[in-house]
Amino acid sequence: MRLAELSERSGVSTATIKYYLREGLLPPGRQINRTTAEYDEEHLRRLRLVRAMIQVGRLPVATVKEVLGHVDDDSLGRTMRLGAALWLLPQVAEPDADDEYVRAAHEEVGALLDRLGWHNARQLAPLSPAYRSLVVAVAAFRRLGYAWGAEQLAPYAELMHRTAVLDLDNMETHPSDAEQVEFAVLGAILNEPTLRALHRLAQEEESVRRYGFA
Amino acid sequence: MRLAELSERSGVSTATIKYYLREGLLPPGRQINRTTAEYDEEHLRRLRLVRAMIQVGRLPVATVKEVLGHVDDDSLGRTMRLGAALWLLPQVAEPDADDEYVRAAHEEVGALLDRLGWHNARQLAPLSPAYRSLVVAVAAFRRLGYAWGAEQLAPYAELMHRTAVLDLDNMETHPSDAEQVEFAVLGAILNEPTLRALHRLAQEEESVRRYGFA
DNA sequence: CATACTTGGATAGTGCCGGTACCCAACAAG
DNA sequence: CTTGTTGGGTACCGGCACTATCCAAGTATG
Image (tube, rainbow over all chains, first blue to last red; front, side):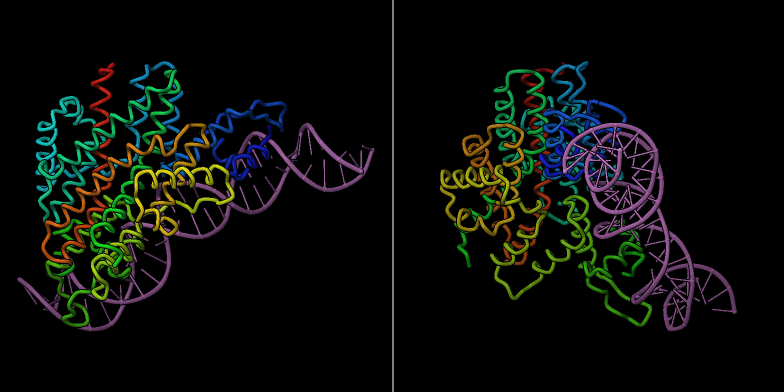
């Protein structure tokens, strides 16, 4: 398959494919001569994966490149590849440690993890981007005067834990390590928009049930 | 309070505040004379709300303006104000109706809603951005060859419904309509990053429980 | 064999977005 | 009176994800 066909089958313009090749998101095709290269089904699959990450997952191009680098790195074990890839997902700006709301948020989130018995998360917390994002979000709520802490978050955390159990159960249905890692990364990237959409649909449903259409 | 103080207490530069004023995200201050205006605590609060939406919720400036417009519109009832504001949240590109994966995704999502008995969501579906986002995400999975449909989504949807119930219960703890709407919009905007962060923390926790740190 | 098209490679340009910088005359504060 | 700040305006910035154009070398078609 040559560039034009790859473009047609993926729905991505040749100019954009060239851009991805330049940026290293797609491996170069098999060079037939100085002006022709041959692509295969693997390229098409990779291209679809890249598009899904960018368009559905809204990852920046540079991040997609990093994520793919970890997914492809055979020198790492499964857990490390997975962790490394997930660690890169969109982050929020570093919280300002001097801010009083941020300090209070740190305490609330710490209390939450203790209360839930999430000892591993507690241990990973200082490094984890997810922990930082949570602190930033909680601080924003508190800055606006809402009581928002361990108490209010615990039931949500419980539900999210059950979601994570589903995620890993789904992942384990895939046979090979490589497939598991790809599925997990995809899950992390594409499942989030899916969950967000389901969440909003559920809000619409429940809201109409309670208050009607008026 | 004048511009400089508003800037200091919010941590937002005067240039940026002027930009928000220009864009209509903040109402103008009380004009004392041609070169002085007075701002109050309401401006500070609104500014913090705007910042939270932009930085934590990652909403584009133009969307923030629209959302605030609906929140402030007293001519609408509670449900409508809420719905109108939520409808604006970040959307995914319109799915291509000609695509076979998109068609299959439509069917799967429809089957899911039937199976769950979400009749209101089913009815709203053609209009709902959340529905469209879900279809796009499911189509992306299927394009990559994963079996991803009503079967796999149902348990997630169940959990998201329980999350939505929590959301609305929390909202109802606020006394006035105006507060309920503000809290709900904030919830939709700030709770999503919160849920995402909790989800990832839960994944880290559960993943370490199953596979250890190796 | 002629002609039109395609290839990889390179470079420059586009449009949007969230600010930022600078200038101004009018006013305020010490 | 001097120094700084105000609202208002305009111009500009850097980052991002492409997109357009050009090129010489090679390919497909009649």
